[in-house]
Length: 270
Image (cartoon, rainbow, N blue to C red; front, side, top):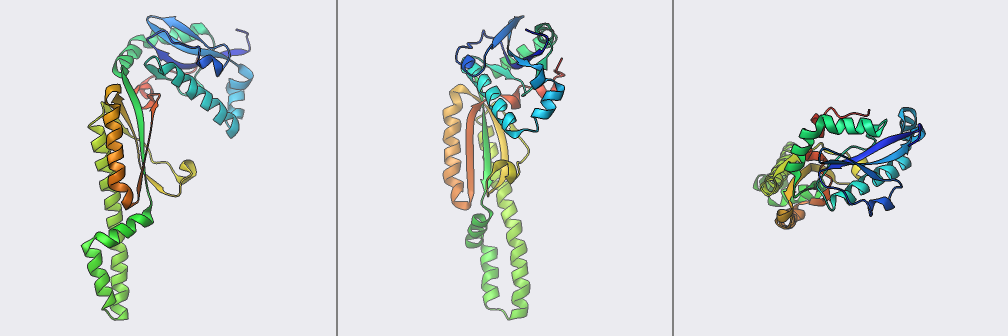
């Protein structure tokens, strides 16, 4: 390691990691062993990942995309054979010793987290809503709205105008109720098949690159032996809701960022 290099941390595990596959993604991948923990790391140039270099490169979307993708793939390769605590993109240390000191400081907490993650996987479930399709479903099936439509057709123009306004307000309320009902029911049914579950912030269309609105962004910690039941429930929900304008996107397994408790840790670049 030269004076112009930093130590880049990918993940921590309690099993000696197999790095052969991951080494095809980045040169010089290695691990640091300390107190039954293994930190998977690599060397990066300070000019690229140091404070100034990183600030500049984070403004380059192509650079971020390429490096973040490599970061995730390395963690996924390691977790194919071990439970891992994944670290966020750009977690850096000045030396191997400073990384080893972090392992020493948090060793018991990391071991507790890894015991919790043992034989479990993170799965993500996002639900999107085609609002126009949902409105159509509500109009065709809700008795209160069907009744107002009948009254509109038989009313003079003045009364029909106010009834139409009432219908619009009632339709908006019912659409929101359906979105909340379907989202909550889906989350609860999947939560029952999980050890833990999280609801995350909804992502805007600029991020999802979809025309439909995201109405649920959730993550589930699922036992490896229960993944089949979990996927079957997702498929059941798809069949039940998609005719009403809902699309369910289930992906995984992912590095367990949502369940490793690192947001509460004071791990920092050092």
